[in-house]
Amino acid sequence: MTKRPDILATIRAIPLFRDCTDDELRQIDSVADEVSMPAGRALVRQGELGREFVVIVDGEVSVERDGEVVATLGAGAHFGELALLVDHPRNATVVAATDLRLEVIDRRGFQNLLDNSPHLTKNLLHSLARRLSELDDNVSGS
Image 1 (cartoon, rainbow, N blue to C red):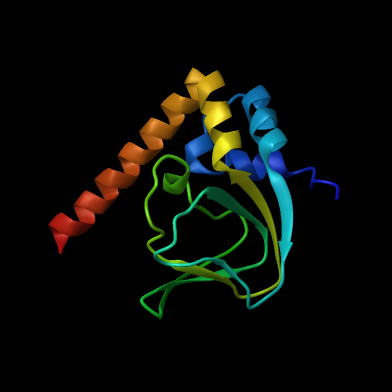
Image 2 (image 1 turned 135 degrees about the vertical axis):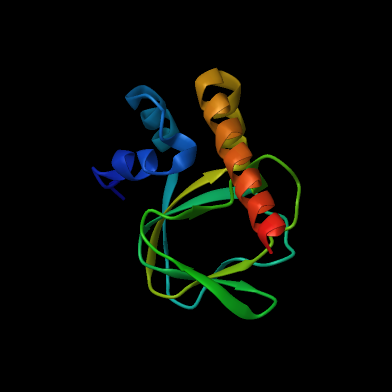
Protein backbone atom coordinates (compact mmCIF):
# COMPACT_ATOMS: atom_id res chain seq x y z
CA MET A 1 0.00 0.00 0.00
CA THR A 2 1.35 3.44 -0.89
CA LYS A 3 1.34 6.07 1.81
CA ARG A 4 -0.47 9.34 1.17
CA PRO A 5 1.90 12.12 0.14
CA ASP A 6 0.38 14.49 2.71
CA ILE A 7 0.90 12.15 5.68
CA LEU A 8 3.85 14.26 6.86
CA ALA A 9 1.57 17.30 7.03
CA THR A 10 -0.99 15.22 8.94
CA ILE A 11 1.67 14.10 11.41
CA ARG A 12 3.01 17.66 11.79
CA ALA A 13 -0.51 18.88 12.65
CA ILE A 14 -0.52 16.66 15.75
CA PRO A 15 0.57 18.79 18.75
CA LEU A 16 2.93 16.04 19.86
CA PHE A 17 4.91 16.38 16.61
CA ARG A 18 4.30 20.05 15.74
CA ASP A 19 7.90 21.18 16.22
CA CYS A 20 9.55 18.20 14.55
CA THR A 21 11.97 18.67 11.71
CA ASP A 22 11.14 17.20 8.30
CA ASP A 23 13.71 14.48 8.96
CA GLU A 24 12.04 13.57 12.29
CA LEU A 25 8.65 13.45 10.55
CA ARG A 26 10.08 11.05 7.97
CA GLN A 27 11.47 8.92 10.82
CA ILE A 28 8.04 8.83 12.46
CA ASP A 29 6.43 7.92 9.15
CA SER A 30 9.00 5.16 8.62
CA VAL A 31 7.83 3.30 11.76
CA ALA A 32 4.13 3.85 11.06
CA ASP A 33 2.07 1.21 9.32
CA GLU A 34 -0.92 2.16 7.20
CA VAL A 35 -3.93 0.08 8.22
CA SER A 36 -7.44 -0.10 6.76
CA MET A 37 -10.31 -0.86 9.13
CA PRO A 38 -13.97 -1.50 8.25
CA ALA A 39 -16.83 0.44 9.83
CA GLY A 40 -18.14 -1.12 13.03
CA ARG A 41 -14.83 -2.57 14.17
CA ALA A 42 -13.42 -1.72 17.60
CA LEU A 43 -9.88 -0.37 17.36
CA VAL A 44 -9.27 -0.38 21.11
CA ARG A 45 -11.39 -1.41 24.07
CA GLN A 46 -11.80 0.34 27.39
CA GLY A 47 -9.89 -1.48 30.12
CA GLU A 48 -7.44 -3.28 27.79
CA LEU A 49 -3.76 -2.40 27.81
CA GLY A 50 -2.83 -0.20 24.89
CA ARG A 51 0.35 -0.52 22.90
CA GLU A 52 -0.32 1.63 19.83
CA PHE A 53 -0.48 5.25 18.87
CA VAL A 54 -3.07 5.82 16.13
CA VAL A 55 -3.51 8.69 13.65
CA ILE A 56 -6.76 8.80 11.68
CA VAL A 57 -5.88 9.48 8.04
CA ASP A 58 -9.38 9.09 6.57
CA GLY A 59 -12.73 8.34 8.19
CA GLU A 60 -14.33 8.80 11.61
CA VAL A 61 -14.37 6.96 14.92
CA SER A 62 -16.64 7.20 17.91
CA VAL A 63 -15.12 7.27 21.38
CA GLU A 64 -17.13 5.50 24.07
CA ARG A 65 -16.70 5.47 27.83
CA ASP A 66 -18.78 3.04 29.84
CA GLY A 67 -20.98 2.45 26.78
CA GLU A 68 -21.73 6.15 26.18
CA VAL A 69 -20.42 7.99 23.12
CA VAL A 70 -18.34 10.90 24.41
CA ALA A 71 -16.66 12.10 21.19
CA THR A 72 -16.30 11.67 17.46
CA LEU A 73 -12.84 11.96 15.91
CA GLY A 74 -11.97 12.43 12.25
CA ALA A 75 -9.02 12.79 9.91
CA GLY A 76 -5.96 14.20 11.63
CA ALA A 77 -7.11 13.20 15.12
CA HIS A 78 -5.02 10.80 17.14
CA PHE A 79 -5.10 8.73 20.30
CA GLY A 80 -2.95 6.34 22.28
CA GLU A 81 0.20 8.32 22.97
CA LEU A 82 0.03 7.52 26.70
CA ALA A 83 -0.30 3.82 25.96
CA LEU A 84 3.08 3.95 24.25
CA LEU A 85 4.78 5.10 27.42
CA VAL A 86 3.12 3.20 30.26
CA ASP A 87 1.24 -0.02 30.83
CA HIS A 88 -2.11 1.52 31.61
CA PRO A 89 -5.60 0.42 30.62
CA ARG A 90 -7.33 2.30 27.81
CA ASN A 91 -9.80 4.82 29.21
CA ALA A 92 -12.20 4.44 26.28
CA THR A 93 -13.35 2.16 23.50
CA VAL A 94 -12.78 3.51 20.00
CA VAL A 95 -15.01 2.14 17.22
CA ALA A 96 -14.78 2.78 13.48
CA ALA A 97 -17.88 4.82 12.60
CA THR A 98 -16.88 4.66 8.91
CA ASP A 99 -14.30 2.73 6.93
CA LEU A 100 -10.91 3.97 8.10
CA ARG A 101 -7.37 4.49 6.94
CA LEU A 102 -5.00 4.78 9.87
CA GLU A 103 -1.32 5.25 10.57
CA VAL A 104 -0.36 3.07 13.53
CA ILE A 105 2.87 3.20 15.51
CA ASP A 106 3.50 0.38 17.96
CA ARG A 107 5.23 0.78 21.30
CA ARG A 108 8.56 -0.71 20.21
CA GLY A 109 8.84 1.53 17.14
CA PHE A 110 7.89 4.58 19.19
CA GLN A 111 10.38 3.75 21.95
CA ASN A 112 13.12 3.44 19.33
CA LEU A 113 12.19 6.89 18.03
CA LEU A 114 12.37 8.37 21.51
CA ASP A 115 15.68 6.67 22.26
CA ASN A 116 17.18 8.17 19.10
CA SER A 117 15.61 11.63 19.13
CA PRO A 118 16.01 13.91 22.17
CA HIS A 119 14.07 16.62 20.30
CA LEU A 120 11.10 14.32 19.78
CA THR A 121 11.28 13.24 23.42
CA LYS A 122 11.19 16.89 24.48
CA ASN A 123 8.13 17.49 22.25
CA LEU A 124 6.38 14.52 23.81
CA LEU A 125 7.04 15.79 27.33
CA HIS A 126 5.69 19.24 26.44
CA SER A 127 2.60 17.70 24.85
CA LEU A 128 1.91 15.51 27.87
CA ALA A 129 2.45 18.46 30.23
CA ARG A 130 -0.11 20.51 28.25
CA ARG A 131 -2.57 17.62 28.34
CA LEU A 132 -2.16 17.22 32.11
CA SER A 133 -2.59 20.96 32.59
CA GLU A 134 -5.81 20.92 30.54
CA LEU A 135 -7.11 17.99 32.59
CA ASP A 136 -6.22 19.80 35.79
CA ASP A 137 -7.99 22.94 34.58
CA ASN A 138 -11.07 20.87 33.74
CA VAL A 139 -11.10 19.22 37.17
CA SER A 140 -10.46 22.54 38.97
CA GLY A 141 -13.13 24.32 36.97
CA SER A 142 -15.88 21.80 37.66
